[in-house]
Length: 324
Ligand SMILES: NC(=O)c1ccc[n+]([C@@H]2O[C@H](COP(=O)([O-])OP(=O)(O)OC[C@H]3O[C@@H](n4cnc5c(N)ncnc54)[C@H](OP(=O)(O)O)[C@@H]3O)[C@@H](O)[C@H]2O)c1
Image 1 (cartoon, rainbow, N blue to C red):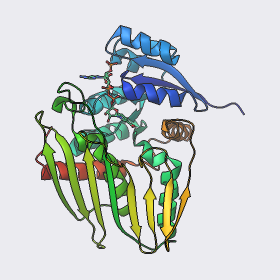
Image 2: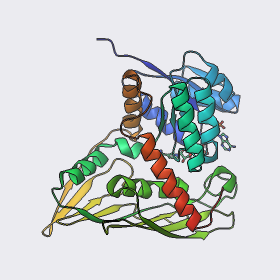
Image 3: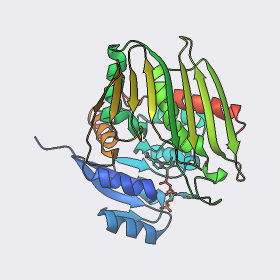
């Protein structure tokens, strides 16, 4: 049987778009069909470098291209709403980078639009689709090690200070929580669900964004999650899960393809999950599967999960007085 093909459009020719298309090239049936940038030179350079068939100097031309099946939105956080809506208005399926929107209101509007148009939309929370993450979720469900009592997870990296750059720029949704803190929060949501109580504190830097953020999530069953994110220092970027009968460590960096170590009765065993790509191919293949099945919502990274995730981020931002 012939593999069904999907023509992908890339909206925004930045850093992550470059990595994503490298992995997309490994996905069966994926066609790197077009890229759009705000600048013709950049679009052409990206297309040449990554062997993309077509390039455009405006996002509008991309969404108007009749041949495109699905668009990957890879612009800064504060543009995810505008650009996803632009795609949906033009009846294009969307895979939008994380965070899905800048607040719950935006995410709910995007989801309503997708439902109204009957078009596929998904948040590109790639960890959801990685083999080691699936392994951890299966283990949790099996209750092999009993209940999960607590979680500690961090994600910090040292981004050189530049007030204009996306990471430090408030206009572009900068700060640690929305950029990397989203991963520990996503993990806590996946493992423990919606927290009952949230406390958080942050160091707000000179550009008005959180340079680090410490979060404590408390759950009705007594479990706790202690989370940390930073853009001014590198941290282990591991996740430690405390089960009744074992301690499980998702090794560094826990949000990307990684290994999992399990300690029981003083014995440590590590399970590897070798991957030959960055790991973005798994989410892309999932999107194609969903499209092939004529679905308008992912059965894994569901609308409900994205709404819960952004709601927790909203609540944390309220605690640290950070408004975009
Ligand atoms: N999943 C992951 O592992 C991962 C990793 C990194 C980032 N991300 C997410 O991907 C998004 C982009 O991150 P990035 O690191 O790729 O950022 P980046 O290198 O700054 O690229 C963002 C691109 O967005 C476009 N853009 C449109 N309007 C813009 C504006 N007003 N200012 C700046 N750029 C604008 C630009 O493309 P043109 O100039 O070509 O139009 C720019 O190159 C973020 O939301 C981030 O959370 C995800």
